[in-house]
Image (cartoon, rainbow, N blue to C red; front, side):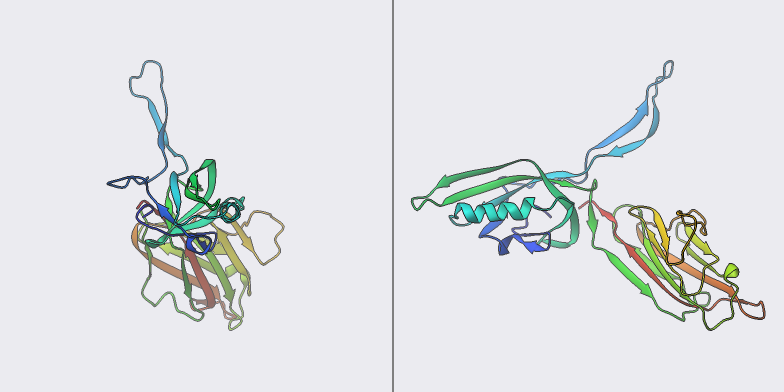
Length: 283
């Protein structure tokens, strides 16, 4: 949680390593913590119809305030160094509070920061700094999960792989697939990889996969790239689907098929498949 933590890590550095200061709250009793960004209905009022048409929901990026309290009088130079650390990034950077290292925010500091202070007899300053934090999303995220399934695994005969989404919403997973079937004399046009989440019915399939090809699915941009030179800038050999993970456990089945020199279907191939995902988290 944000307000019951006295320290935070921003852009790979802890507040406590920069200056003698704490993450504090000015509230006396219970903490008030934002769960998500503002949620707004997208709807249209139609003449002659009392109920508007609802198209969906739109969420604004999560914003919240933090307060940094100086533990002892500090020089202007020390305070300026602290502010440079906070304001230097111009892209969203990782923010983690010490009380929960598994909850991640990606943030920039915005608005009008203020320094409320008094000056001591030795011309040093003590007080607190108020800051507004803006996230790149309407929620925080779980820690990144990275799973690797090794070469020479018979996906057909093994039990389904369990992939757990510990977040509060359905999420999509990045994928990296490295395929090598030198043990077979394979017709590339017959080489397929099908990854199915039997828990929610989503799947992604690649056909015509070449030996030593590496395929990357980046869900932040929804772009698929390959190490094989393609004439089409948009990866053409897939089923136009993405693999999603429901909240909780997900049973993943991976089917890799190819034809050998005798034109027989084989289901055991050399491949390495990586899952890389984060889920949205409310609290």
